Image (cartoon, rainbow, N blue to C red; front, side, top):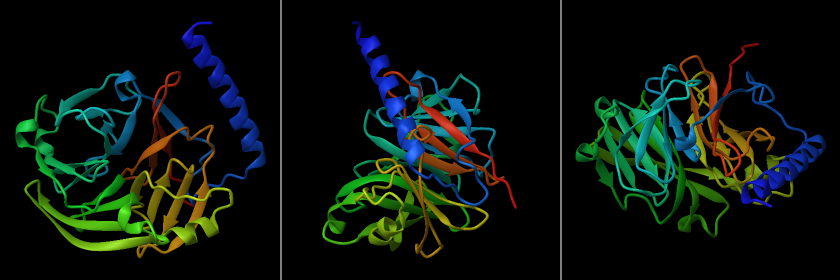
Length: 288
């Protein structure tokens, strides 16, 4: 049997298992969205490992994205197969991207930040204008980044950090950004993991490992995505846990990126694998 046939056979088995699991689990959606009815955009091979997505000023005509192996910023119109990129860095484990105050910021899993002007985002080579910020975050693993243009603040949330090892909390850090060369820590916050696990419906899941962070522009609530747990957590503006939604793994294969556009539509990106392409799911906002 050929290797590809093996992958296809495994994929069929996994799909059947996920379908059976879906029949036993009750999946819910946040108010205004229907997670059972996404509009799906398949990514080309270059973005099979899409790991972070963002919009410039919420405009949905162009999505900006990164993948977790190459230092490239991709840009494209959702639904169009062709993508273009600019090179901002060497190969590495890049996990999320944010755009604020005409500055693009990319988060590396180690906690390093890469910043460059948005005006150069479509140049083929931009490494000459990239500012790398090292050792500004505690030792740990990071995947979640959000840029708030209204406050000029950048939010970074730990996925797994040494400072949180013996606590029931995940630490977050706030930076003020006015330009790629001006970035300084201006606050901290915490997310109560114990409260997340208490509110979830699947009591077998004992971990919470955030993979993306975004703020709902209409409600000002925080949305925190956890790929390893297939979970979406919603908090109020002060990080108090409001809702925990289990995600259907047949739809959310490996959710790693999240963003809202200026019409309050929600986008979640999924990494692909050997047999399936990466994708971006769009959930159209419907007011009551």
